[in-house]
Length: 150
Picture (cartoon, rainbow, N blue to C red):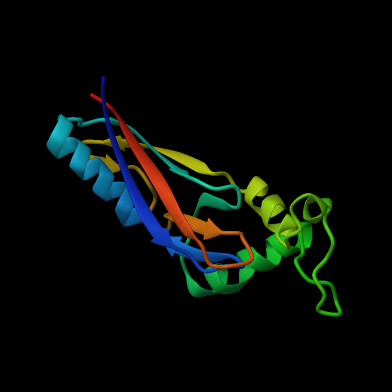
């Protein structure tokens, strides 16, 4: 089995900014096919840092700009009804304001694995691979892509 690894850096937008990284997953597979001769296997993307996640969703404006954030805010809101940052015990440890961010990212996942066949990732037509920034401010994030197969 051959292994190919690539790291790509992204500039994210805080409070649930999302980036469609589908093309980057396919690009990593394309490079693995060219460099290692891998035809079939799996690709895993892993985002570094404690408050970002990877998921699949239909990358359309309503879902990306509103719906997912509103749904995750039900479980871990950032502000109360008066516009004040809600206290999380995490804030006591680090003296920051991103306790809600850690909960949101825990509900997502820092990684996603997709099979590929004949050099093409096997996702559906409305299924985009998406990097989600859960932190309260813009960040620089890496995704480590690792392609394994034969």
